[in-house]
Image (cartoon, rainbow, N blue to C red; front, side):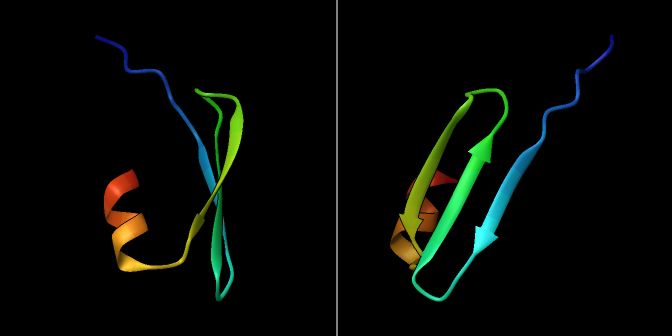
Length: 41
């Protein structure tokens, strides 16, 4: 079985995490806070 590679980029700042998942193709911004990170993970 071959598992295709998938890249996710995360730009970290004090207030936000800017996330780009190439599989989804849409950028997303979430708060740099435990609750927001837990929800997206």
